[in-house]
Length: 297
Image 1 (cartoon, rainbow, N blue to C red):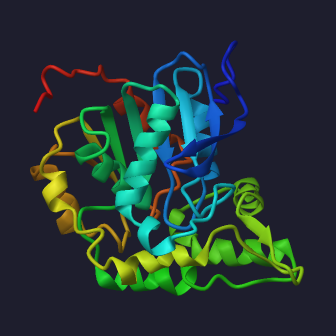
Image 2 (cartoon, rainbow, N blue to C red):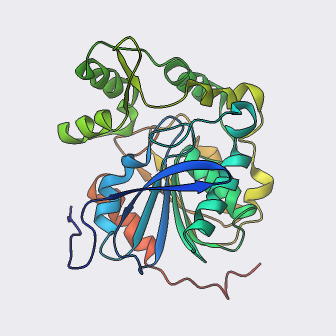
Image 3 (cartoon, one colour):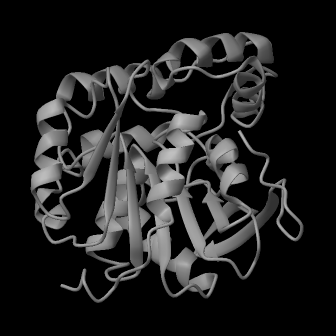
């Protein structure tokens, strides 16, 4: 995998903050400030640092923005979790982020919740402003068993005496991501840790984020919005995914934007987007021209 550290590009991320819809969001930024922008939005209980490999690989050609969603990482926790830990507010934040950075049109790469946020924003708050949409292992409907599996580890994150114990837990919980190097697992841990008042460590997110599934049980039922999309769409799926079922993935290739689908062996929910085959597929897709005229609504 290339380091993408060409002259003028940022080979390591800059850490930045921006107030969006009244909340402070943290994001990392890679690449040239005047290059075509990409927003990379992470999964439910993760952070923008999950995209380090992909962002570094694309930084020679793009300005890559990787936010921590509200309640995750270094972004502010919501003072109104019932109202704000949901797709409508995430899409509002996405619009505020794009506007706050003075971006007109963006490419979007979203993993799991980030893919759902991208689809919803593309149909609402960022309509006609997302030129290329990459959806990583999520669809406009979710199977209940997969939701229950995710809630089992995300809803009540355990606390540990040491960071190495937290790493072992993360390796088990996120094993479906597929292969990651020891260095990548360690970075995932160190960018996902917060210390509690008693000195123990736990995952760096607000446990209230999972209330989305009880307070808004139909939040991920989004076929109506998906069917209105027309931008080029790339659908990535872990071959063993329990969240994006094969029949839903197939329907996504036939409806709405008629996504181009790629299944990756050796992983479930969700591909980590850290290996050459996954990065190359995204790179090739994002390089296609922004053909607004032929994809008009």
